[in-house]
Amino acid sequence: MKAAVVYDPAQGPVYADFPCPEADETSQLIQVQASAISHVVKSRAAGRHYSFSSGEPFVAGIDGVGLTETGERVWFAMPVAPWGSMAEWTRVPRENCLPLPPALSSVDAAALGNPGMSAWASLVNRAGLQRGETVLINGATGSAGRLAVQIARYLGAGKIIATGRHSPALEQCGADVSLLLQTAEFQPRLAEQAAAGIDVVIDYLWGESAEQILQTLASHGPRPLRYVQVGALAGSDIRLPGAVLRSSAIQLMGSGIGSLSMAELMAATNAMLQAAMPAGLTIATTPAPLSDVAAAWPRDDSKKRTVFLIP
Image (cartoon, rainbow, N blue to C red; front, side, top):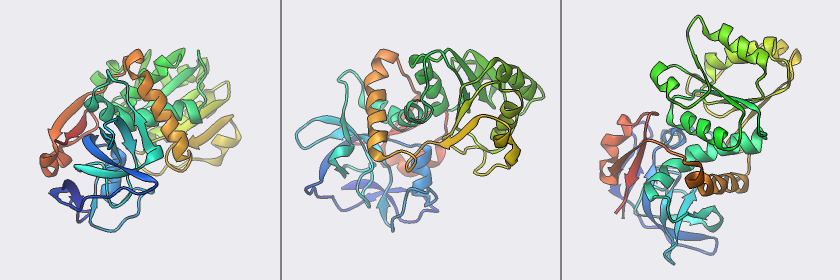
């Protein structure tokens, strides 16, 4: 079969032949229709993600949309290595397959799956968001952050504060308040919002922005706050004085593979996919044939989700 095969993590995937998988008692074959690039997919393909350990060669991709052997259209996640989702066929544990609403297109479902899982799980499973609470999305200008704004709105957030580094995208993300990072006005404006009360932070950036946000919230936040670290687009490490946590009621936690079980992540994804149409969830996509994977891979950015179409 044809697949996006990683022979060398430093080079990225190429379109090549790969052996077809076979089903067994615990897994089923999926005829793949669509699979999207995400930050975790890129990180795993490069051999850098904490959740992945496999020898080469292997097929890229961790989730997608396809048909079971009985013809049911499903969203699926975490194929059995060395098979991934970016192939004509893959092998997936039966419990990692979710039926899709008929009206949700395969391209949209593939694009929504990973960032929607992340946003829903961080807001619901980790932060325990309650209706009327104030949410800050750090990194709301990327496709995942914009989707988190939409999901927070659907879940009943009372006020949504968005931070980001790109002014036009920040103003268009749908938040109630926009705070532009790396400006002189950022910390004073954040302090004002913190004084009014922030209940939840969903952080896609980490790095220097997280340092600024945590220290400002510790100094000006009047009530307990749940801070959920999801991504590290601005840096994998931070410098955090211990006094920030000792002097405040900040609960610092992460959301991802490991902090939640696979069953919890699948349940979060199912809830998100079933809500996608009622909530009007949208995400910008760039469809491409899988045969273009070598060229499309380096062009992908966080503004749109590249979705590979597999005939």
